Amino acid sequence: MDQASELRKRMAHRSGPRGVSLKTAAVTSGKGGVGKSNVAVNVALALQQEHNNTLILDTDVGFANVNVLLGSGAGRTLLDLAQPGVLASDVVQTGPLGISWISGGTALPDWIQLSRDQVKVCFDKLMDLESTLDWVIVDTGAGLSESSLHLLESVDQILLVTTPEPTALADAYAMIKVLVRRSPSARIRIVVNRCRTFSEGIQTFQRLVEVSKTFLSFEPGVMGYILEDPAVGRAVFRQTPFLLSAPDSRAAQCVRQIARRLMGGEEVAPAESPPSRRGWREFIWKLQHALGRG
Image 1 (tube, rainbow, N blue to C red):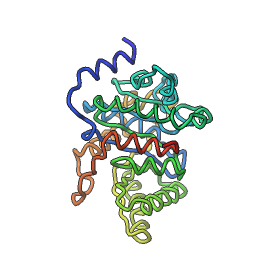
Image 2: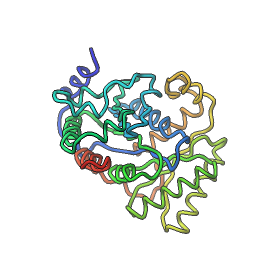
Image 3: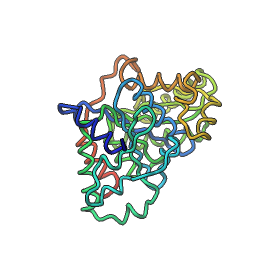
Image 4: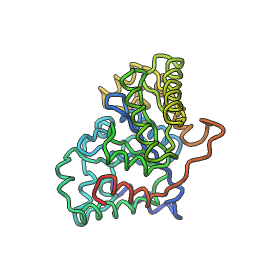
């Protein structure tokens, strides 16, 4: 059975409206090179392992690499939805554990050349996925581009990935500063990647909290820490997610804990209220505007 047929089968077996219960989280970073896409892919797989139908949406148009981490060819992309007769189920690819993903593509000029009406067609078709999913994990472009910022404002939660390196911390703070000024209620959670020990991860997070509270009167939450692990590099080289190639590794255990926290199975901060549910339709509408063609 091909991927499109499999997705249609899943759609046929899901009943009832799910647009409001569907949850969205964006994985982003203040700079490249901190492992953002790797975190997105492995957290999504951890959610899938917990029996959540999960879609990875790679919106880093022009630099999409989720397919590389999953060891798959690019296949069809969001761009293909502009073609007559191409359905949302045709561009969804199926990866390990049955996880779904859509590539943003690597041909940025092709996307820019689409007309406004063609872009609207693309996102109208994405509405058809509403009844099939529990979680959408969005892998955004790194940095402070306007499209990424609009996209981050459209999701339920933001996972901001950083490392203990001073430059990564500075860029993470810059991201928090811009997001909070644009959306004071933004739900930002920190993932400290590549920390040598949990103590280093906690200290890194605390430094971000201290400077954010001092200069922004804002306190980000913590989503978790991912320990430095040679299994991660080996997995990237083999194009296999480390959650699958090294399930007992330190990094894999950390990612599973992050997924449980994301699902609400572990408290991140007892006083916090749960994230609002924006719904699939609002997310798609904002995604269309985030890419500047709404």
